[in-house]
Amino acid sequence: MTSEQKDRICNGIDTQMMIENFQRQEQLKSTSLTLEQQTISDSNENNQNDDNWESVQTRKNNKKKEH
Image (tube, rainbow, N blue to C red):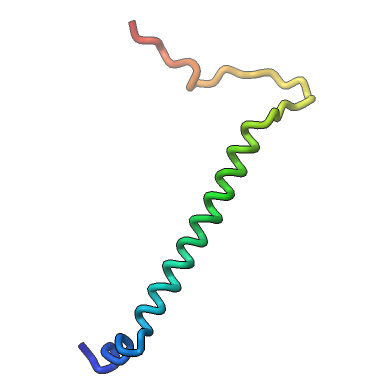
């Protein structure tokens, strides 16, 4: 271990950087969760359009049923 690394440990610089990185990650998680909750909330509301669109059957809905 170099003297510079020892100094960083003794001065708490590495620990402080780890704490700051952790706080940033937690903040990003909470922001991401808030966006996800908003998306779910939007999809649960009645979002029907007024343009007379018809539902089209998708490939996902066409899966063959196993007997």
